[in-house]
Length: 191
Image 1 (tube, one colour):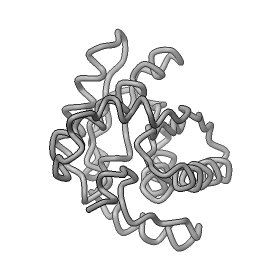
Image 2 (tube, rainbow, N blue to C red):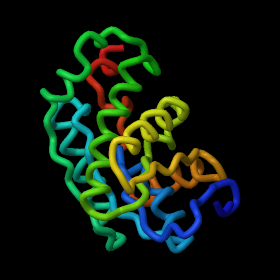
Image 3 (cartoon, rainbow, N blue to C red):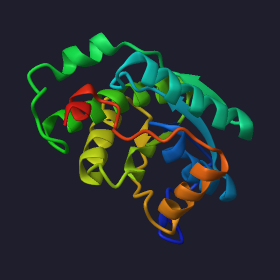
């Protein structure tokens, strides 16, 4: 492991499949990766987002950001009904509760599978940049997802370090990103 400022980078990491929840959260992370000679491929898989119009806005912003930087961007498709089936029985869980951890696992398992299929050794997620989410839950979900696929490792990282949260806010303005006010889940929207 190499430590570049407060970010710990696995030895030899040159490329990563980066699960992106949205353009604002991924912007500073992508900038940091590129500045440290790590090539990200964005994987946009967020079937939790509701309603469909909200999903499309976030998806297009993520795609616009990646295209502006010449980064490969992959659409993980949208199947909100399948996601809801996985969350069944957890609708009334509080934020940072079992539903959130299950949602993280659902999305990161698909990311791990995609990483394996595309030949990426490492995958990471921008979910760990949000101050509203539990990094411990995200890391547990990512590690568990990676255990299901040979040759794939989750890169657990606190993307709030080294001024990346501040840089995210600056890039939000520079790119004039749409900035959502909830995680995307219809259950968090109700709150």
